[in-house]
Amino acid sequence: MYDVLIVEDDFYVANLHEKYVEQHENFRVVFSARTKADVLTYLATHQAPQLILLDRYIPDVEGFDLLWQLRTTYPSIDIMMITAAKDSDVIQQALHAGVVDYLIKPVELTRFNASLTRFVARKEMLKQGQLGQQTIDILLGITHDTKTQHYPKGIDASTLHKIEAALRTTEQGLTAVSLATQLGISRSTARRYLEYLVSVNRLVAELQYGDVGRPERHYKKP
Image 1 (tube, one colour):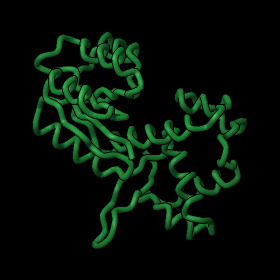
Image 2 (image 1 turned 30 degrees about the horizontal axis):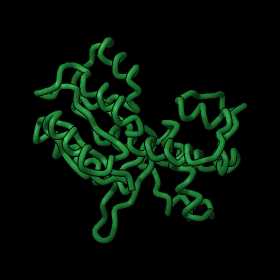
Image 3 (image 1 turned 90 degrees about the horizontal axis):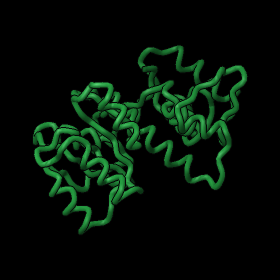
Image 4 (image 1 turned 180 degrees about the horizontal axis):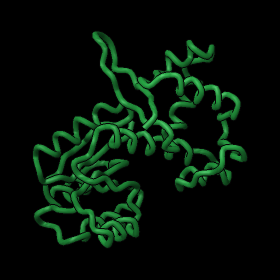
């Protein structure tokens, strides 16, 4: 479970983003800050979260002062910008500061969820003791010709192609359970391949709620 700190001065937007985060099974919101003072006080008195969702426009913050302060003081915390700022100079500054993603408001749930899923995938990859070039390329968002592509450990090209073929047969997408049943593989294997495809931007994942029980992750083409 990854802890998330939201930094957003608009109460409505903060609540909306909190709902988005809480829909993802791997994340929980531990605090929602409205000001720079709120952020720094929380971080000084609590265990650091793994991820901060940061708006650029905060009342007591000048430009990227808070972003750079966080990067300097808490380098282990990943930061995702969620802002209305579209200027290329602003985006370049955010990238220079090492943000893991940059989302433009208003953020669609599908895009928001895809970002969180990629965050989890990157964290899982980085748990490996050593990384091969293919895994590093995935982390950096570099794509390859699928004919010559080498996949990370646990991903087999033949199985992956079967899964992608199954996905092409439906516009509605699939769950890990339905894919496992269709191909005769385990649910954990189906889920691993589906999450891999999300991590390389070839699928998006959404939570769908049934009449009873836990919501299911539903995978489909973006």
